[in-house]
Image 1 (cartoon, rainbow, N blue to C red):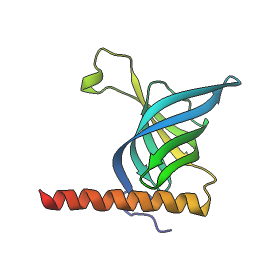
Image 2 (cartoon, rainbow, N blue to C red; image 1 turned 90 degrees about the vertical axis):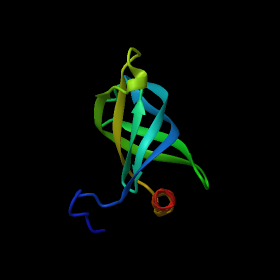
Image 3 (tube, rainbow, N blue to C red; image 1 turned 90 degrees about the horizontal axis):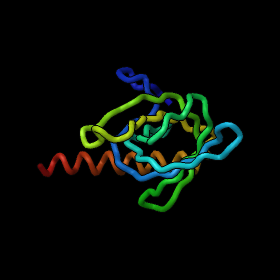
Image 4 (cartoon, rainbow, N blue to C red; image 1 turned 135 degrees about the vertical axis):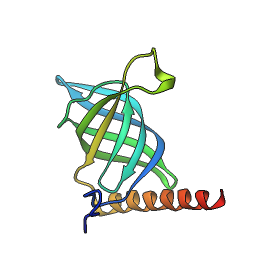
Length: 129
């Protein structure tokens, strides 16, 4: 797959807001949480979570696409402390960058198709304005 010369990415990335549940292992104990996927591509995603998850941590993410639920395996590749205006004064939030790992052809196809549908919906909405 060819890389985008401007971004260096192999897949298009689209902004979204999807509720997600995740689990990972920390100190031999399974940890679970709830977050919000804020962007998605065929190679990974970025989600907002209530905790810092260390880089290189394997993670399982479950969410719902328009065609049904999906569970995706990945690894944390970045984490950044963020503050949103509506969160000011509350506990800190983190963005976790996740690179997908060991996707089947069917899983990657579902993700890419979902991203393309979202992208088309966004373009259509902009045209109607």
